[in-house]
Length: 164
Image (cartoon, rainbow, N blue to C red; front, top):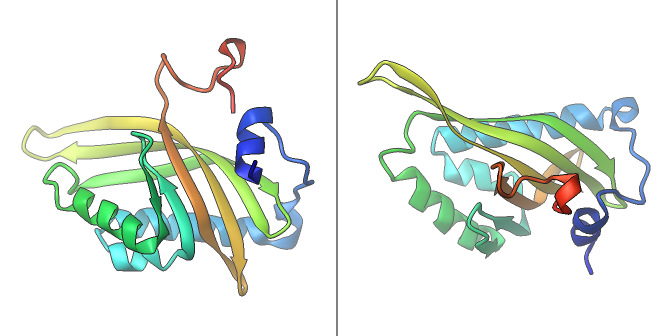
């Protein structure tokens, strides 16, 4: 079983985390900010620079994309859809756990959009993510990103046994 599966199963890691003392939290936040900015600008090549070559991405439908080429195909298919333009992705309330080679994070994410024709601002979707980062020089890269919806029927909920 891999480390991320253990975290999902037990809800905790065996590593002690203190990214606040060593400055890693700022480096991780910078990678996350670059990710959402590049995604929202449809800069897929720039976004893929933030991922390790052998990285994995899982979308909200449970489809898994192995490696940058497969991930790039998926993200390019998203950004050409008319409804994607103008979306803003927000990642927040991140929890950090140190691992042997980087960090695991758990976060909430929200997608918002201002619909100009209707002059309406909406929350399009909400969810949570599990990410694994590996060290890359003086920074980090995504090694694994798994995104899930946050809905009443399948959100991580401790009493129902679905907590991550």
